[in-house]
Length: 443
Image (cartoon, rainbow, N blue to C red; front, side):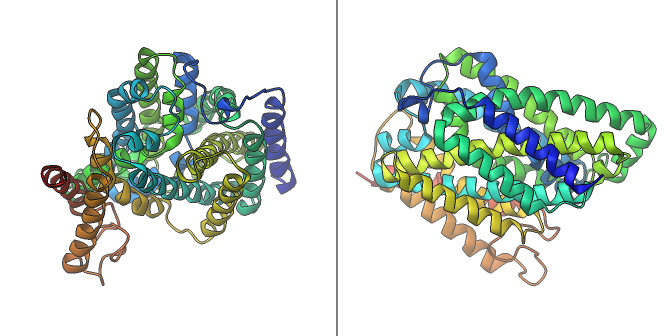
């Protein structure tokens, strides 16, 4: 297909989304959260759209290619597990902090402002990594189905989403989620219908088996467990989820939306995992119809996740770091987006981008929720986090074969390039042990 037509499709979709937000009216409070106003359907669609990024066609496929059966199902499970934590802790935290918008605000009430800023920084690092992965995925996917430049598509999407977010904030992100979710669901149904029509069931089973769907090895099991730990911990620090949690009209809506979105996320991850690398696209006959479908689907997927990340980053910077809504927060957000876009050009593995940020989140998740019913000092969160990170890198420096391990010291991979269970287990359990010890000694 002519590259100009691909650009035109993207521009038309982005222009339509942008003008849908023009009629929105946001007051000061709605810039960060829609307090106690949203029901089950709206939250379910918003959780679904914000979590279903373009990563479902890239990162899970990388894991499936190398990780075999256990890793495939582990990644699918990890798409749902963050919602389990939100299901358990979301209602309680929303009740304790009725005017809240981010998890870090809750942490401040339990530990203090220093702990709040630490959680905020880890959250920004994770969300920044997510942005890099999404922009890199644009390059992989778009350039595999056409001769367009992925970086130009990324720039168009970044500019459009920032334009409507800087005007209307979270309200625009939440509103567009609902539009995008209907489009994503419809296009996924059509794309997979085309996929099944162009490939026989026996062929699909053959492809899946060749990709490792029915192969179960010990190294794959270990990596699957590591992925579940890593993704569950990291997604908890995606502040876009917490903005939606604090927008719920009641606890019942949070729980129902978490269940529905967890199922949807698991289905999306499972579908992406069935094909190694980008071979899902290769299995389609890339005629004009399928290219239009894939370009439209990819644009909606990446726009829905990027606007969530951008608004969550801006909210975290405003509410938790600068402590005010300001132009500085917008400029910092713009700088982070531009930096992510530049870094994404050099990315070779989407999965590795996530792993580094996942490790920091794993070291922080237990102490962040430990004091949900009591208050303490900043040190009860800071010491376990720092101690856990130090323990992890000491382990990797002393016990990892740096010549053979593709991740070296800093990227937590095993010899196969998969998530290393030992590294993530040490991160989680060392933070738990240090937290419990520190709780007995810090007065």
